Length: 293
Image (cartoon, rainbow, N blue to C red; front, side, top):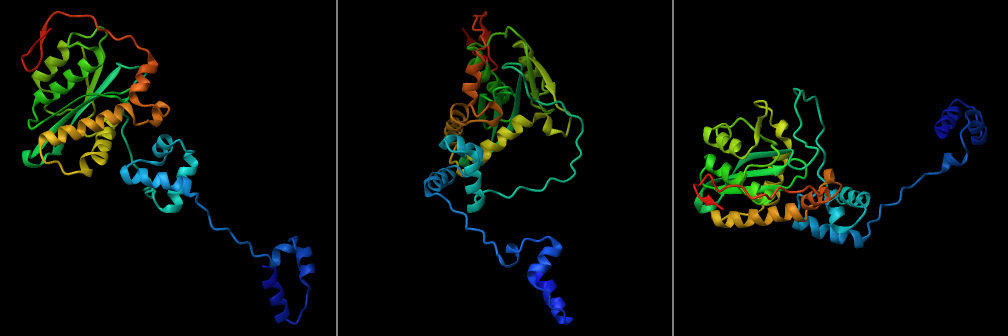
């Protein structure tokens, strides 16, 4: 600015030294001729190498998960993501009007479970239905079942799997809690609602056309598809079941969650030290008609 002003005065026949112009406008003289240069950012290969290797194996992982698994500072990992172009550009958030929704979060384990269905292509066996059940407090995926049938038996099998995994029995739970789902035909069917009541659970349904009210389960399904289903081509139902089972083990025992203080779902549940009701109940029959001891 000072040099431009001096040249303008010279064009008018007035010669003013730079020192005087700097004094008049209160500009430090050293800044007139100084051209600051920004050094090219440097990336330490000791950090970039392991980060690149991990995201090539798991491209859906964000910088927080990568930093936790590698034991690096999350700000360092985010900087390397940005400089290397490994981070997806965030979509600008516009106006998104939402109705008032009840969150699916829970304060303690076994306060609210969530369930949903999704479709998975299983190669020669065609489209199959995957039913999932998770604890909304620990994010632990307790029960799942993959079947070619999209009927209530698939959702019932996943629920019974979750009850056995958490309580060790299919008997009626000691303290009733909520089971959240959408308003699909499976979850509102007589067979499924009767089964839920028989185990002492209370169903709650989200507002129609508002999947954000079951956001935890929707996000879990997205992670499952991005990190497992969409990354491989299943040849059969057996192949899909084996791969999905391996991913669920990874999700429950190895994958950290920011909402859990970067702990895994199993570690978060163990930290709660909630006593589990393992009292033996009278024999009952599962949804498949099997007599259980």
